[in-house]
Length: 114
Length: 115
Image (cartoon, rainbow over all chains, first blue to last red):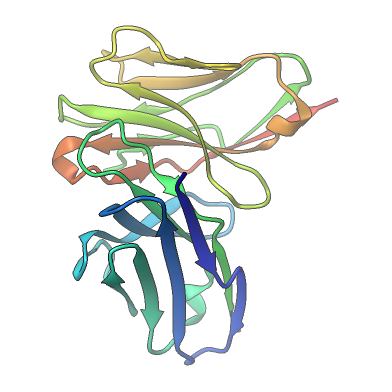
């Protein structure tokens, strides 16, 4: 069966520090991968998605970046965090290609920028 | 423009009663999918139910059913026989074929089940 992992689970970082969040998927190959951010009490905002290794699409211009160094690994990074980067970050994966393919979400990382 | 609109920020429901969560959507894509997810306080997103745009019948999954009214672009979630464990935030989402199958989420509805 497929599983999706995210780490760390929680993170407290000062403004201006770098960030690296990791997401890995097991039990499937060539998945679509997604990074979402959720502000407190709000809906999910799609940040990046990837349909293959090295293929990253950005949805929202900001100081974050994403990379996909391996088929089942998706990394969210920042060189310098802002206070507004605080939130709950969720990674998700889906099979390729049809509207009914649901997205499966990881447990999330709660980031607080101080 | 908002693709998914959830107009109820919060709802209270008595245990064992049914509750309907509203969701309207906006798309011109003839092929799309509608999803409902549950997010408890732990933060995980749990898939509940799916409705395809070409599906003739309303989707059902246990105590969850989706009232799909295509002409009105409405996809309301009905939770029957509410349980205390149903207290959570609920999100409606849509996936469009010409939008690279990305999910667009609504703002969510918080449901609190009272004993």
